[in-house]
Length: 243
Length: 243
Figure 1 (cartoon, each protein chain N blue to C red):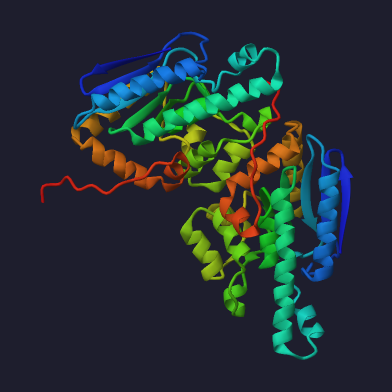
Figure 2: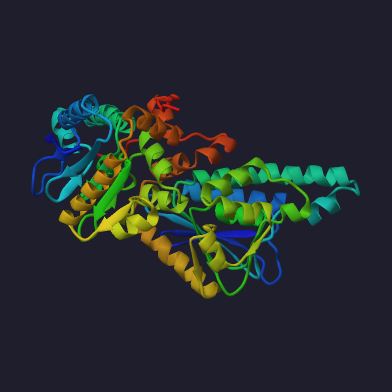
């Protein structure tokens, strides 16, 4: 499902399962991720950071629709209820990341689609390999609208309206270099190994600043009023400086 | 502190004090600036403009924390109260600039940090020298969140969310050419003298348009609903055209 380890000042959250494992976001994996993030939060100190990575061909291919179908007892409306359930559960993962008291980096080493793409974009920095993998919001093709927090995250992180339209309304499949141009991600790297190395280098640069995590989280939330609005969070003023 | 003079149709607001004077925004300087802006407003006519410049190595390095500390009687909480006081007073300067009935230009010839950077960005146009000086929001390093109007000004003037993140959440120190790419400022110029010359040229182009200042100010306010929202201002409709 997922593992958490700390190397130096950086926490690594790994979506485990190599090869063709799609790291589908079902209630079990979502709970596992939340548990890991809760642990990260409790162990946060000045100068820590989180890097999220995934094994295999996929970063994450989104909600576990196969699980919803197989758990639905053959009822299409029940399958949709189960999908809605995952949408509700995953909203808390986004809240956890937006509130995490340290910088967050997603190292996208494979396909990221739908909720899987949203997972990546809920991080402060998104790095991706350019040789493989696409970013894809499949909802328009599948025939479903976006949860409010999906749209809020994409609109808050991507400034160009045409890029938002291309991704959300046109269901474009975007490779890393184009994703940089569109403003979906921060940088593209030659291969998976290089993307992770770059993420670690960035993480180390950021941890060197030894930021107070609580202040960092409140500054982050204040940057994204639309996101915290739909998540029901607030940004509070703090002064921890010794003047 | 600061001086005001008019040359032709352009008002020059100069933060005085050469060399290493940081033009720290303490209550005295803030009051001095507000008094100058009030005078500019009363003397505004069709086709006038404001250029704000500073002497020496700094445009402004932000609030006067040293003054807060020395005035606090050794009490850290009192020092923070005094900082909050400056935050409140300076909000008046931003309101004055956002409401000023003429185009405003900041010629940044030195470092601009925190409230000093906000002072520059509260102008309609920001020109900067490329050979020296950085723009820097120090708050994340100092351990404090931003006043609401700081975030509103930056978010309203900078379209790229990654640039806003780099400046506010990452505390990046940005030189002029990079500031242009990030959308923090309008243009970069070879040295201090060239910046001021370019500011004057721009001022003269703008004053040639002979805009009605009242209409200009209302149009400006309407461009920045987030800023006027937090400042408690409104933009009103006016028709002065003879149709």
